[in-house]
Each structure stands twice: as C-alpha cells, then as structure tokens.
View 1 (cartoon, helix red, strand yellow):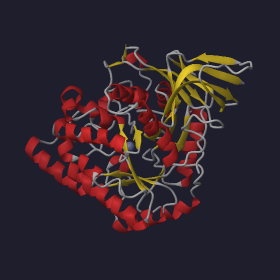
View 2 (cartoon, helix red, strand yellow):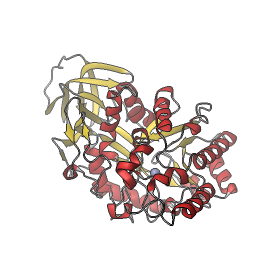
View 3 (cartoon, protein in one colour):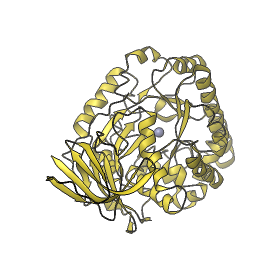
View 4 (cartoon, helix red, strand yellow):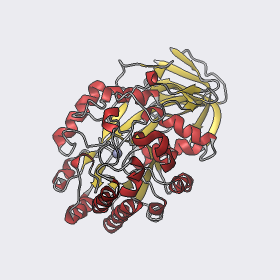
Length: 440
Ligand SMILES: [Zn+2]
C-alpha cells in the first residue's frame, strides 16, 4: 500500500515548507521538498493543497473513563473524538474503576484498547501509598510514566504520606507525572467558603477554594522531592504564574499546560459556569497570560488536554456538588490554532508543544515527527474556513462541549493514523484500531 500526500505545506521541527509525503506500509518512506511528484504509482493520492500538514498530536493527559465510568465516556467514543480532533496518540490516566494501580488492571486496559481504540494509545500506571513494590515489574517500553496524585481528591488515589512520596520519587523507573494541589489547604478553603456562602458555593469561588496557594505548595514539594532524588518529574496542568517561578531551573523537571487553562480564565465562569469547572481551577486572566508566555520561553514543555468528560447532569450545582473536568480532545488542536492566529504562539511552536515534545519527553518510538522511517501519524489542517461547534458534531459520549456555539477558523481536514485515514470528510473510520505505543 503506497500513499502520496501531495502539495501541502509541511510544518516540522521548526521548518515550514511546500512538500509531499510518501507513505508505505504505514510508515513515512519519503519526504519530498517542493511540489515534485516522485515517479511511481500510488494506491492513494491525497491532495493537501491549501492545508498545513503536521505530525499527529500526542495528548499526554486524557481520562477516557474506561473501565468503570463508562456512563461518562469510553475508549471507543473518546478515541473517535481524538481522531476527529487530529490527535493520533493519547496517554490515559489511572483514575478509572478499578484504578490502574495493579499490573492486572493495566493489562485489562491494554486489552480493551486493542479492541476499541481508533487511534494509538498507552496508559499511565498509578502510584499509591503502598504499590512501589510493583515498579520494577512495569514494562518501561510499553507505558509512558507513573501518575501521582499529590493531594487531589479525584478518584481516591491520593498519596499523602511523606515516606510514600519519598519512596515513589526515589524508586520510579519512569517519568513521574504529578497532579499538584494541597488537600489540607483546599479543605480549609472549602470550610471557610461554606461558612460564608452556604453548603454549595457558586462556581465563581472555585479558584478561591482550589487556590494558587494550594497549587504552589504542592508543586513546590514535588520540585523539592524530584531535585532531592534526581527523579524525572513532569508537573501536569500548571495553572498559576507563581508556580512558573519553580520551573526552568532543573533539566529533569518539566511541565504541562492544558488547552483549557490556556484558553479560558476566571471571567469565563460567568458565561460557562460549571462547564469549565476543573481541577486545578481555571485561574485569573493574569495567570493565563503568564502561562501563554511560558509556552514560548520553554517553561511549559507540553500542551495536553486533561480531557475529562462528565455528564451534564453531573455538572449541576456549585463548588461542592458539580463534578470537575470537561471534554476537550476533539477541539484541542483547532483551539490552539486559534491562539496561533491571535499571535500567542507560532504554528511551528504549536507543533513543538503538541507533537514533538510529548514524543521527546516520554521517549516515544518513531512518532511525533514527520521523519522518514517514522509511523505515518499525520494531520491535515485547513485555515480560513469558518465553522461552528454544534451538538450534532460532538463525538464525546457526554454529548456537550465548552466550545459549543464557538466559531473556529481552522478545520481538521484529515487524520492519518499509521498511514490509514482514520478521519476524513467529517467521518471516523470506526473499523480502524490504533496501535499500542512503544517507548524507549
Ligand atoms: Zn487529569
């Protein structure tokens, strides 16, 4: 099977150029600069004129909710949303039911994905107060890292004992990805807010409860532990300007920002309410501006989504009752392309942060770049073609999006996963199954 992607504008490793890509047996066999067609016959020719051609997005942070929470989402539905959004690889988080904190639970997820995932996949292993004994048995070629909830209530995976934290940081054979929010500070803030505003404070108080202080203290502890034990630390979903001050000093410490925290700020609670309630909370406009700045100076290394669907009925109420998290994967790339149009970052930098850097950071084998010999995970995006997000196009099982009603100027035209068109002309090829990603 030979495919030619012809006459697109390729964006890769800081370069933007007219070119074509030849795909053979699922891999990129040739990258041709300028519009010369190599002399050979092809089974398939894809016209990319007017499109930018970039590597498939690698989303290092999703919650596809399977197994155990499939009323919200599952691997089938969310990987369709990923394909439609230009995401060809995702790493799913361990706060499912059962939690991915045993080798058996990890195997169960791989088995499910091998039947249901329409793009490439892998899974984080979850650390608990007492499972470091399993670390030596983890296959470092098969999973990206270990997820550690340092003081988050989500999914009851809180690791809060100091000696457990020391053990995890000193013995992890893989990058540690941390959710950093200090539970004691959050509990104190929540008690104060309930006293002032009643049992279920309005969502506008969410960033006061899940406060800057709660984030900063926890991230500071993670940075201290990683420095002490020379651990490879990747701080998930950074939300405050203050935490950025902790970064950029040590090479073994990196951070992720999410599309939601880069796009929304506290002023958006008025219009979107609990739809944009997530943990850590969306903070001030100033925090958002500083996060955007950090995209360009290297303190933020990766953009993920923290795609975390809930049913709308579960989003009712305020700070105490409404579930935290929102779906984002279907619109993450086009949202960031909107920020490119606004001058927040360049298209080359977007490709660095959403495609190259996740591959580098987690040592992904042969993905994340347009390179000869690499897997043909490729996305075609078209600028200047306005369209509006309506309910009927949302593929996430929960059936809603914080982007509903929004008009985008960029469109994902086609997504190829391992050389196969998994999304094109508005349709996902649901017969296609992605691959288990290899590492290191
Ligand atoms: Zn998350």
